[in-house]
Length: 290
Image (cartoon, rainbow, N blue to C red; front, side):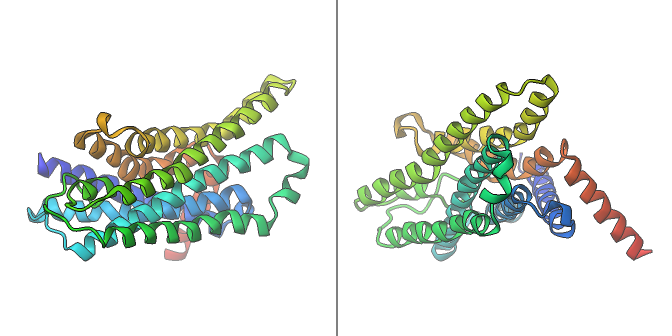
């Protein structure tokens, strides 16, 4: 199965890189897309690129070389960046839900509320917050002593590493639960609250066309919410008694490879602004080449 898996994940990674970088280039090159919604989307694309790049290339090297070795420093580095990008991803998705809430429920005050200063704080805050949380995970991990050296996973993650420890991991596990509550449960509840208000506001729109247009602006984001939180909640918030190594690996594939690959399609297929910007970008490259 390894040659098939190599071809499959290589294709997924190439699509992820090209798709997310194209969205970043399209948004940065088109002044019409310099709005809060697309600013957050560009940040999300950058995070998805980083999340996939942190795990998938190493997995491809392991398959190709038949060697699944990773040094301890590299393992901790991979774990750091996995949680760094994962936390930013989770909080950014909640920020995008808040942006849609303001746009639909307070359209007349949208430009005032979503000021450049607030957008900078909402986009930059998750990066700073994630830096300190991920660093704390690593600092707690380096004090552990490990009895085994075989990780039942395809990359270095917290739970598989904690299972290999011979020393007390209660502090690590408590911190994992606290962080999961802050960066998974809290953003997810904020998203649910935002969309509850959005649905109430949309149902008050008198015309069917207006309701359809309002729902269409949220459908792509809801798809991302379902893909991302549906898997991360199962890994980090469900009891360990219902988790298995196989389930963790399948869930990890979803949020490290599948979701970053699908996000560019989800956000661009039904988005005329993104499609238009991509066409302009491609035409500009063709014209400059000729």
